[in-house]
Image (cartoon, rainbow, N blue to C red; front, side, top):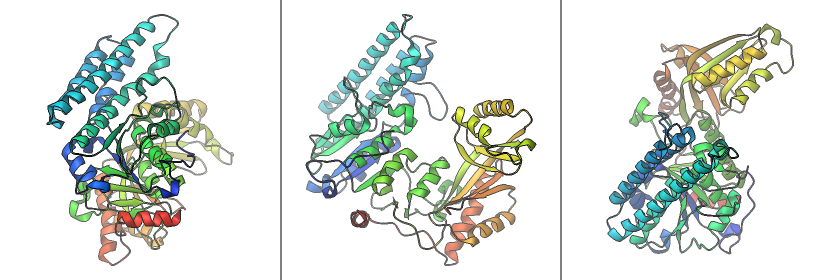
Length: 511
């Protein structure tokens, strides 16, 4: 996979170690608040040279990718899903028109200057009609028996998804130029490009003539690459692009702007006054968060940053003065502490009891292979003499397919399932025997039903399995015991946030 081993680049005619720039990613919800993005992130109080030495990778405006592909939460079909289904030859075209209308509405609200709005509208219409014509032609070609639409659907999905990021990036460039910033639109979407390239080569070509010390590049979150980002990373492609841009250009720091802080728990559950930003942690914690479905960054995207030693900062779009949380591979706290309590609601426990497993080497391989075949990632699993227990977060329909396959391959096995809630206490250093005992004692004093506990020897997380519909109460109990009470008792608490200059200096020293 192309994001995992980056060559050391030459960038803007400088040696990599001389680069002073940072790379930023702005998510879709933040992008929808145009004024906040410009006033809090891209311009703010900056002027002159302070505006530059930054690269921005932007997502599509909130809701646009759902309209283009399918709704991430409800599954409602978008343009791609309707086109792939082809039950109605015109349904996808109507959906594409609705996307076009929505994009034009966004332009109307974003631009006060009529000339800029007309440029933005022309850009949208060109992209939308270009895609429409392409899809009509493909549909016509696939009417012949020699061509199968299924063979082209992944390419179609890639092309459709790229419209959203191109729209937001182009708009942002126009808005910045109107405010006197020398911004440049860097289109990595491969629009009308005849040559297929690797991810890294596409980025190198996009930045070949850009001097970031004098230009503010606004980059599409989608990159057209030979391997196909969508097929490998799904809808996490914008973070993969962000990571790859940081690695290829050898940025000093990578920064993700979100609508919230990376905090010790969900403030909606434990209360806004009881949580605090994590401040500082490492990539081990980021991986554990991804495993719990709470991605600070896509794990594949994090791998490139981690390998190249680039620190990642998570900041709140709406609190521009707050330094946020720095994720740095080279940092481990001296004192054991819990940094965040989070988890998964409505997970499924699959218990496989098979008396024939006892003493048989590799007895778990068939069951694990069944999950792999249906592409269901495991949150965790355990094994004893005759029982395997798996925890997954997936639709029950998919889990049933796995169970059917396990039963077919192990006909003597007894398989049971139940819904559970998984709550995980996570930290960069949890090697303290008191942490587990404090957690279990707090659970024992509550009305919660604890079903299982899993702790790894690496000392970065402890997972607690509870009966279904226990999630909120479990998070409250564990956050109180492991973070709030420890702080009140003067035990190690979360480290203070690291300002950007300090993080850059530390990265330079490490390099």
